[in-house]
Image 1 (spheres, rainbow, N blue to C red):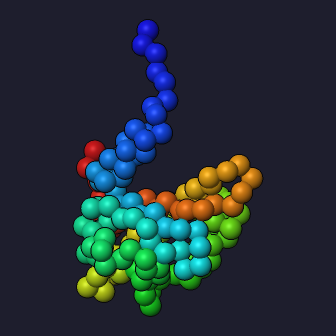
Image 2: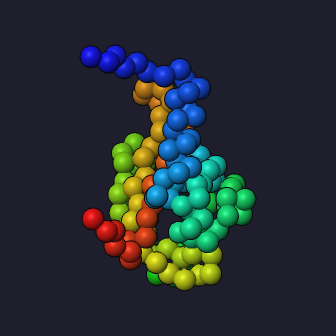
Length: 134
């Protein structure tokens, strides 16, 4: 039987980055700080929203919101994250051309130490208007 072991930290981080970079779903990492500045987005984010990584790094994910974005959903997101819980939901967001689409997303708080608040959030996102084959 093959033994498995945890890869060294650098290899593990490199593996996770490769997964995020090549995911079919959009991946966004934000700081758990005021305004939740965007730290990372993958190619699927650019395909989904039309925004390049360069144009969004340091900005708030609120840039994707607009007049039809449901504030009750955003309030539920805030409550979950403040409680350190995973959030999953759908809301109308807007791409770089201001065209609305329904975003289905899951946001996961990342804690670097047990008992401490989240330092980062990872959002996995997809266009809920599109159906998947299979």
